[in-house]
Length: 253
Image (cartoon, rainbow, N blue to C red; front, side, top):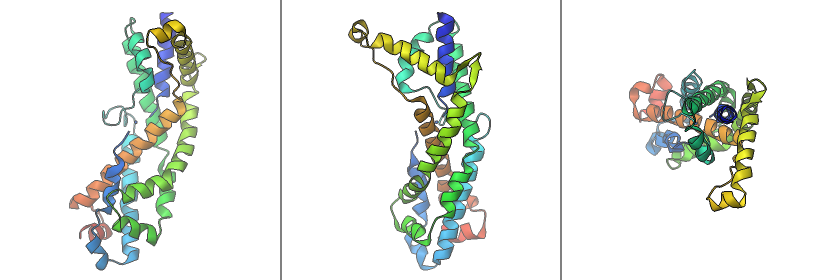
């Protein structure tokens, strides 16, 4: 029983692939001051925003897409679904249980990094399609204007594409014929069979209904947005981050 319980936990973590985020930082791109528009052409503003966004994406993908990118940074490390806390807490009390939970979380985050490394094309497409009107709205909008634009243009595609990578990852066999998804299904169904009984309800237990793939996809996407936003904020506020003449001109006002 202990072995089965521990294997089940491992599945959870390997499934828990991915890192919520304060995406307002991405909106800092709107930090190109409104007064700057008087000395910049629409083409320059658009090109400058695109370049900054591209640098942000490159930085985010390079950082989180590297081995340990998510796991080694506590700000991005992905934990197991909150609903599974009561399960993992009890399994952690078993001999060797905590070690396995830790291993699972590490494996989950490595899977997230693998997926993050493949996200560039989705971001690139959204950046390429930015129009002069889009750039003007970001420039003249509030501090979340850039975030709103990026989320609108990339999130559907990111979730669809990322979801595919995640589904593949969590369905890979981990131990024998056990995958993260199958372990998660077994773990939650066994838990729910107890939690939904009269005794379980009386004990205050609640069923776990988290969709593992959706949970991991959201964590992965939000983690990338957060990292991209940090780079954009740096370009706006730190002159040393403006590595081209265009960036210096657009963001130096």
